[in-house]
Image 1: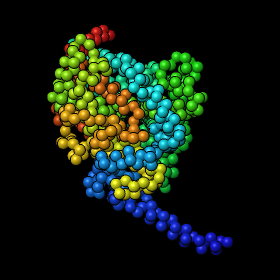
Image 2 (image 1 turned 180 degrees about the horizontal axis):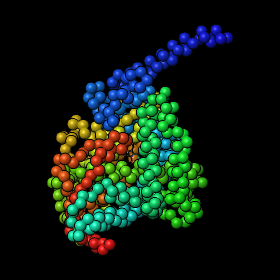
Image 3 (image 1 turned 45 degrees about the vertical axis):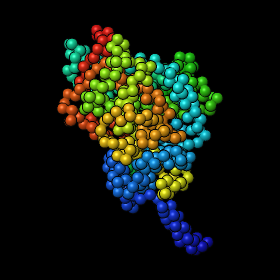
Image 4 (image 1 turned 90 degrees about the vertical axis):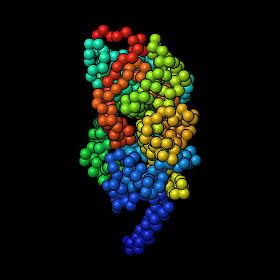
Length: 497
Ligand code: HEM
C-alpha cells in the first residue's frame, strides 16, 4: 500500500506543477517575482507609485506578487471599465487583507453574496436614498455651522481681535464635522467626548493591528510569525473592546435604543429579527459607515484646501461665486449647491487628483476571467488604480495641475459613470454614499471658503503635498493654515467664552 502511494507521488507533484503552470500562463506581465516573497522586496511604501512605475514598463494591466498572492492592477480607464462594468459579475468579491476583516459579515468586507445584497439594499434604502439624504439635510447644515463656530472660537482664543495669528490644524475641524455628521446619521446623536475619544483610539489600534502585520499577512508561510507580534489573544481583546464600545455608545440597552435613537441603528434594531441580522452584522455595519465614511470625506477636503492655499486664484474665484450667490447675510446651505458650479468643480477636481482611496478597496476574482486579453485567475486580487487614472495624461491635460475649470467645460460625472475619474469606484461594489459625501464635501468646503480666507504660515511652495502610505491617502503632514474671517462669518455671533 505504502509503495503504491509512493509510486503515485510523482504523478501528484507533476499534476500540481502543471496546474500551477496553467494557472500562471497568460496572466498579465509584471516585474519578476522572487520565490516565496514575490515582489514585496521591490514595493515602495506608497504602493500606488510602484504600480504606476511598473505600468509604464509593462502596460496598463500588470501582475504583482504580494507574497504568494497574485495581484492584478489596472491603470487605464478602458480596463477599469472592463473590471468594474463588463466583468463585475466575476470580480466583485473582496480580498480581505487584515485579520480584523476576516469574518466578512459586514458590508465592506463581505463577498458578493445574498447576505451582501441584503445589506447593500438595506443601506441604500434606509441611509443613502435621495429621500434619506434630503431628510438629513438640516443635520449636515447644523454640523457645518458648528464647524464655523468652532473655528471662530479658536481664532478668538488665539488673539484678542479674532484675526489669524496662530495657524490652525485644518484636519481637526474636518475630522469633527464629518464624524459628527455620520454619527448623527447612524445613532441619532454626536458622540460624547469620552465615546469619541474611545472611538478614535480603537480605530488607531485597529490600523496598528491590521497594519503592523501587513507584510507578514501577505506571506502565507510567515503568517504564523505575525502571531508573535500580535497574538490572537490581543486580537480577541481588541474585538471585545470594540463590541463594548459599540454596546455602550450605540446600543445602550436595546429598548432604550429603539425608543430614543433616531438614527440608522434604530432602524437596524427594528429590522434585526425580520432581516435576520446578527449583532455582529449590525455592529459591523455601523463600524463600516463610521470608518469608511469619516476619514475618506475629510481627506479630500484637506487636500482641496491645501491646493487652494497654494493656488489663491482658485480660492478667490470660489469665494466670489459664494458671495454673489449666497451674499454675506447668511451661511451657505445645501440648496445653494446647484447655483454654485465653480464650487462643484473644485470638489470634482479634488476627487480627481486626490481620491481618498487611490486603489479603491481590493476586489477578488470569484472565477477565472479575461481582462484586456490576459487571464485573471480565480482567487486573484484586483486593484483599480483610480489615482493613476485620474492623473493619466491620456485623459487629462496637465493632469498634476489643480484646475477646477477643466470641469466647467464639459459635464463630467464623478459617481461611477465616467471611467476617467472614479473616486467612488463604479459598478456593484461602488461606494453607496457617493451622493451623500458629495453634498457633505461641497457644503463643508463652501462654508470654509465663504466664512474665511485661507493662507499659509510658510511660503506656499513649501507646503508638504506628499502622501501617507496606506489604503487611505492622507496628507503626510497635516495642513496648517491661517484663517481670516470674511463678512459671512459675522452672521454668527462671536462667542463670548
Ligand atoms: C469622499 C468620500 C468617499 C470616497 C472617495 C469613497 C470611496 C469609496 C470607494 C473607492 C469604495 C470602494 C469601491 C470598490 O471597491 O469598488 C467605497 C466603498 C464604500 N464606502 Fe465610500 N467613499 C467615501 C465616503 C463614504 C461615506 C461618507 C460612507 C458612509 C457613510 C461610505 C461608505 C462606504 C461603504 C459602506 C463602502 C463599501 C461598499 C461595498 O463594498 O459594497 N463611503 N467608498
